Length: 366
Image 1 (cartoon, rainbow, N blue to C red):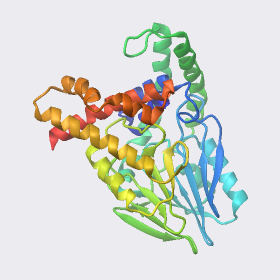
Image 2 (cartoon, rainbow, N blue to C red; image 1 turned 135 degrees about the vertical axis):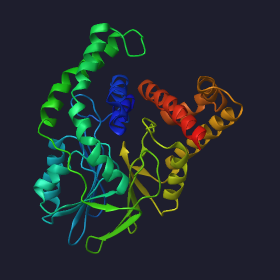
Image 3 (cartoon, rainbow, N blue to C red; image 1 turned 135 degrees about the horizontal axis):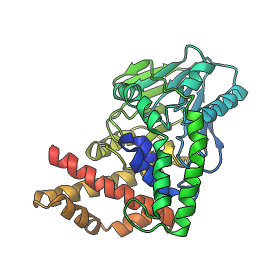
Image 4 (cartoon, rainbow, N blue to C red; image 1 turned 90 degrees about the vertical axis):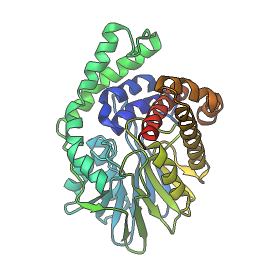
C-alpha cells in the first residue's frame, strides 16, 4: 500500500503530487498492497465482487460490487480506467440480461467514479447515486483532477533525473526500477484518460436510500464523515454484506488527504451496528467478520486521544508528531497491520504521519 499513497492522491487530489509520491513507495508490494490481476469473487447468489489490477502506472483502482435482483442490477463503484469498467460490463452481461439500473459512488475519488460515463453509455437511463457532498465533489473537482493527471509523469521524471525522492533521500536501485515502471506506464493511462469524462451522479441523497432490485433489498447509507465528507456504504441486509468504499481499506488503512479522523471513529462504530458478516473494502481483499473494522477504530482512537493529550499540554505540531508514535507504541500497531511486509510498513508509516497531522488540525479547530 505504499501505493496507497498513490491512491491517496486519488483520494484527495489535493494531491496528485502527494499521492504520486505514495505511488513511488508502493510499487513492489505484495497483492495485499497492490493488485496485479483481475479477480472475481462470488459473495452470495447473484452478488459478486470484482477486484481490479492497478493501472499501468501503478495507480490503484477501486473494488466494484455487483448486485443482481429479479428486475434490476446495482453496481457499487465504477473504477478508474474506462477499459476496466467496460470489462466489468461485459462480465455483468454474462451473468444476466437485466440492465444495470443503479450505480452507487461510495465517495468522490475518481478511482471509484471515472467509469461512470462508460456505464451510462452501456445502460442509457442509469441512475448514478451519491451522497450530496460526494456529488458536489465529483462534479466540481474531479474534471480538473483528471486534466492534471499527466503531471504524474513530470513528477516521476524529476525523481529519475535528480536521483532523489521528494524527501531528499537517495533513489536506490530498487526504487529507481519502481519509479521507472510508474513513469513508463503513465503514457498508457494518460492516453486512455484523454477520452474519459467524469460523469457526475444524477440521484442525490442526504442520509439513506432504500432500493428493491426485485426480491433483493439494498440499503444505501451515509453513516457520517470519515475518509471523505460524503462516504457511503451499501448494505444487503438479507446477505449481511457491506460494501464500505474507502471507509475501510485492507491491510493498511488510507489516512491520506483531508479526511476526518474524529468523525471516522464514530462512522465506523455506526457500521458495526449493522448485522454484517462479509465486507467489501474500497481496496484490498474481502473481509469476513468485523475484527478489522474494530482494529482500525482502536488505532484511530489511540492516535486521536494522544494527539489531544499532547495538544492540551501546549506542544507544537512538530513536537506532537514526534511524541505520538512513541506514546501509542507504534511498533506494535505496525506489526498488527503489516506484519513484516516492508512495503506495507513503508505505506503504513506514511499513512500514520498524515493521520497525526490531520488529527492535530481537526482537534485544534474544534
